[in-house]
Image (cartoon, rainbow, N blue to C red; front, side, top):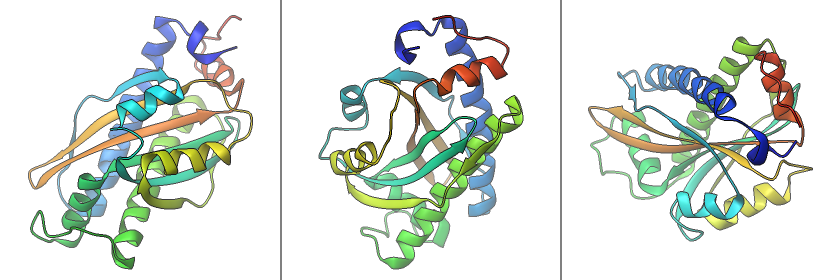
Length: 207
């Protein structure tokens, strides 16, 4: 199956529901980490090819932070959580209790904080999918990068194996009275892995 070509509206609705639950769990985890109330805008799930991903997130020269984890088990692939540069700085200010706008660069403490946030958000999302489907989904230790989007994604894609030709992109906005955080969650499944996800949801995809 080619992910982007044969998935119906029904299957996209299922992915949207998974996105709602998964990122709802991620928002709760972020609130616990920040010790502040965090709300979440309705996430938007869609399949995009690689060039569309670059355009969506601001272009290849846009500076971003990225937590990148390999996904093993029943749905092998890779998962990434990407924040814009400004959202990265806002997250550090929120976590450290600084006045919004204080952080303008990343030191070792900031890198550690963002890597941990990315790990928590991605882990919460994947755990929610596992709970919904009963699938065994294991994430590896995250790798963190703070660089231009083109470099970050190119390195991730180059390290990939046999991926589907489409990326599941979930765009969302975390809202907190202290500021807002725009993020993109990317799921890069190995070829055929999405079939197993939909089968677990009781809606197999016909080739």
